[in-house]
Amino acid sequence: MKPVELSKNVFFQQVNHFNRRLFDSLIPLPEGTSYNSYLVKGRDKTALLDTADPEKRETFFDFLKDVKSLDYVVAHHAEQDHSGSIPFVLEKYPLAKVVANPKCKELLMSHLQIPAEKFIEVKDYDVLDLGGKTLQFIYTPWVHWPETMVTYLKEDRILFSCDFFGSHLATGAVFSEENIVHDPMKRYYAEIMMPFRTNIKSNLEKLKGLDLAMIAPSHGPVHKNVAFVKGLYQDWAVGDTKNNVLVAYVSMHGSTAMLVNRLVSRLQELGVAVEKLNLEQLDEGRVAMALVDASTIVIGTPTVLAGPHPKAVYGAYLANALRPKAKFVSVVGSYGWGGKAVEIIAGMIPNIKAEVLKPVMIKGRPTEADLAQIDELAALIAEKHKSPAPLRPENQAAMGAA
Ligand code: FEO
Image 1 (cartoon, rainbow, N blue to C red):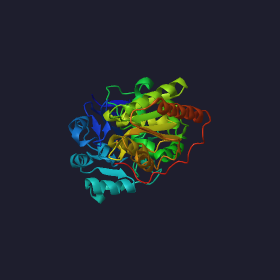
Image 2 (image 1 turned 60 degrees about the vertical axis):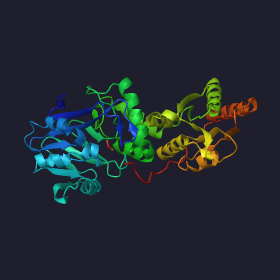
Image 3 (image 1 turned 135 degrees about the vertical axis):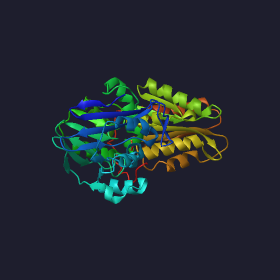
Image 4 (image 1 turned 30 degrees about the horizontal axis):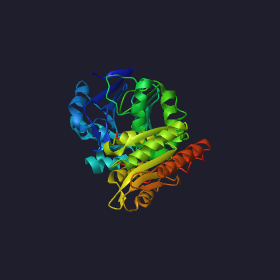
């Protein structure tokens, strides 16, 4: 694919990574990803906005082969999937300066060892005139690192948003289609942005007044459907939870699975949507997506070495780290002779400020009396969902995931 001219002298350089299957050695990428950079040519100066993961720098530099001179590299974010090729860009264009905010400069100096003299620092709302192309830099901290910022190209009404509004989606398509981009965007939001909902909300407010023709993220296709994309983020980050339950479970000899299956059936009979996910073959992205809308989270676990199954521990850890909006939580499971599975799970989810609904832990194989307890739990969940509690106070994330 060649650079695509989005607007006069504004070029989209989409480096697709179709066969990448993991990000951060953690996040599954079922549809690969892309590292997007943008080239903006003014009358006097030329700026490159972001770069690409160094693993794909050959493709990235192919896009630049006809670019004879470069004045600026705008770094929106120091994470290496966008910044990692900056040192190579500076080798090719030794006169170019890196345009970054002070926090991003600090991170790039430490992570990529770019010398201080290579930088031009910009403040919030500073502008850079390229000659008929005016770049305005807007700080959008914590989407999802502390230094993140976006650029607004005034003349063309394009917002270069880096990770914000992105999707891990390798595609030959330049522009997003709503039905195709929805799930990859939701997965991306859930995995990357959800822990920072408070910051997302304030940054959405900050960008609200911009007149936008396009949002150009640094992963996935470019969005012309601006209202649709902003509406999704508004719903996910600010909107209420849905009449949904996430049941994330693992079972060893079938007892916990029996409880889970009964719970799912009863909830569905009561009109509650359920996402049942077996933690044995965990797709972290599926769990994260289910957490976006779930009003209730139920962890299902057998007892192993007096505590929860390690895969349930991981599921609980993940849910806690992602800080979902859920209002209710519970635990169902089984034990052989004793243990503290419920207490240990409960102690692992302090970030989920939810009401705990009475857990159901049973000994051995479930009896009818045990299953009746599950029916009661299902009825309680359905009732709770009908009279929604106020949204819990938002958590201010203290640290970002790298
Ligand atoms: Fe796409 Fe946070 O890097």
